[in-house]
Image 1 (cartoon, rainbow, N blue to C red):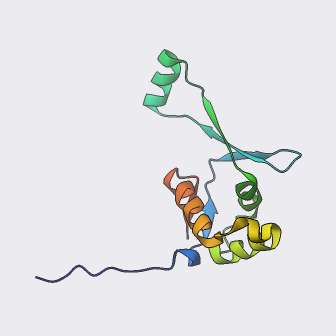
Image 2: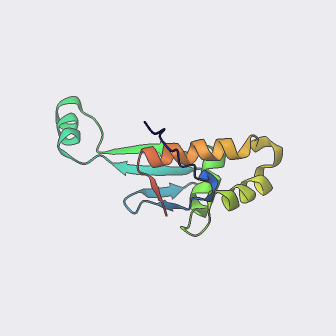
Length: 115
């Protein structure tokens, strides 16, 4: 019996791309809010029977609000990390672990995809 081969890829070399269906706004103080429209059969039922909202709002923290507008589909996570390091300094450490987790969460909700 053969052992399963594991393929290791460098997560930091992935290039994030914002989903086109996500609307977002940036307030005067720089905070980014993502607007997600709740569509689909189950969401419509929840809206009708349980008074759930048609639009959900996701408020990003300082670092997320700094990163979101910079995502352009050309920069990989490593180069985005350099921008974050310049802006936040030691406050963002451990930088790449936090960035990897941030992008994993965004990808799990389909807010971004990777090239």
